[in-house]
Length: 360
Image (cartoon, rainbow, N blue to C red):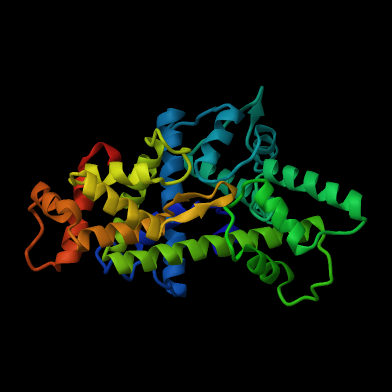
């Protein structure tokens, strides 16, 4: 949320990569914990540095410019370059700001003498976009348009603003997040934020309430992942490999809906990790799946959310299900013997997956 206020609408993966860079040699189990003001400033500096490197590469490689001669890129190409640093502006907006900065613009081509001018242009565009992003609560123009359409529909029928339950309907209707049992209570808490619950919300208030709600959902999901990793004995810095594995199994599941992690995806996963599924083992695995799985909305199909998948993988390794731990250990004998057995087994599997087609 703070990075969004600073004009940097980063994805969860972007933030995770940044935080990993704070202390690459530190304890991976503490890397994703609370960060203080000093670490936050360092995080911002790291992001600023990476953005400058990106723009410098664009200036020199894409536009064929160097520090000693100027470039004349098309405004459309400059706008494309700015998208790489999370600044979403149109070519005509780039032109207006470039003219304000005193750059020559002719036939939709802008003259930039030095790469630092591209940095300054990016910063000015970000300042303009930051205000607009705040007004949109970090949502894209397309998302705002869809929210406004449904908002206007409710207002035309009721003659008033929206209540929390109506906003929740819009969030679910637009597919911004998956449904969960705590959604109603969470939306009420974030939407009213201490106000009288008889009050209704304007469009702008709805956008910011929805953003707070989605931020909370994201933080809650991350907390569940970290708790699951602790139970399974998986170091936090290896979660991304398991997430890649998890998503790839869903994508390759010919029996499922390509959205949820089904029992067939689990069977494929344990086989990839070295297990041999006999008829008896298959029945055992299916029973374990049912114990960990949750229903999938209105269809009532059972599936494993990512945290549940992590916990189940830990359980399978702890029990050495179908010689899973034994087979994985044979695939990689590079870990030191002093590592605890549960962590060693999980780490071995993670390293195996890094070399497999799932991690590529």
